[in-house]
Amino acid sequence: MRVDDFDFELPNDSIALRPLARREAARLLRVSPQDQPVYSDHHVKDLPSLLRPGDALVFNNTRVVPARLSGHRIGRGNTTPKIEVTLHQRSSDNVWLAFAKPGRKLRVGDVIRLGGSGETCYRDSLDATVREKREGGEIALQFELSGAFLDEAVATHGQMPLPPYIATQRAPDSRDERDYQTIYATREGAVAAPTAGLHFTHDLMAALTARDISCHFLTLHVGAGTFLPVKVDQIADHRMHSEWGEITEATANSLNEAKAQGRRIICVGTTSLRMIETASLEDGTIEPMARATDIFITPGYRFKAVDGLITNFHTPRSTLFMLVSAFCGLRQMREAYAHAIATDYRFYSYGDACLLERQNP
Image (cartoon, rainbow, N blue to C red; front, side, top):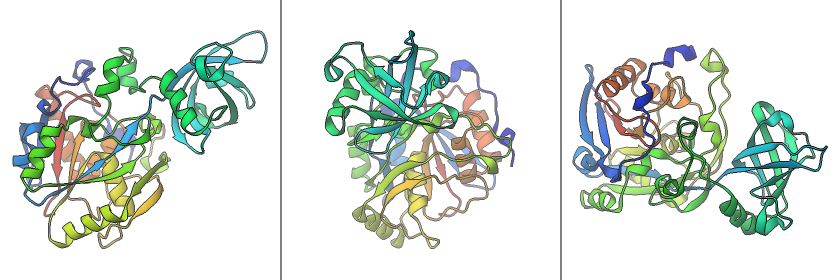
């Protein structure tokens, strides 16, 4: 298939730049699995009545780090050009892979001083050396600090890495430190939020539990590669970014028990779905795992374990729109998105959501 097959026009004013004050007040488009698709309009707070007792919800508990840092190249020549880096994957205690802008101003061995210009690295700035340059502006940065000291310095000097479609229209601020984080985020390492989970509140989680809907947690540290455009013409030629994740033995056992009892597995977000499908055998059995995944789900993929998906509305020509098209069918998702646009749903990370259900789960 061609990437053009997944294109659509979205009015600029459909892009949400802020979330609603009450997370669960976001709108929810339900796409029911029928020969003639039915689209019904709800709100996220309605989920307890829309889901079935016994359903197993799977959440991604990754926590976003303030991974966007600004600084200057130092120590080479008479100029100190400005450099912005977005960390996207940690490879050791003191090395991160990052995207640099402008990457052309950097060479292997260059030092970037991030967050300030003071002489003391820990207090006033954070120094990192370029150890490797890759394609597309990607670099490997080795920091002078490591472990918890590096984490603290990044938290001090970094900003929330808002998606480009928000960051180009406004600067991140203190509200984003709260808004761009799920209430159950516990494991630091993501540089993009699992945005479907942003709609969930403690009251909503309690209402789900009261409805006998169970909640399970896994980890996928979402990388900045999730925002990279697909630059090839044929989707088969696209190389998916790699992200690290973990499904514990306890979580795998609980979900396998749910499947054995005929209960549905509903993933909250495409990140949870990608992890479950990565860890699933052909018979639908979910195995524990702690490793990277670069699974790329496109139309024609046979889903092994996931029966439903709660997700936000995605960008045109993106791997995530390809994923939901694989889940429900390209024609059905085109119709669903057309309905959402015509009825003023809010799109992308801070926008509204949809509930996608597969046929005969």
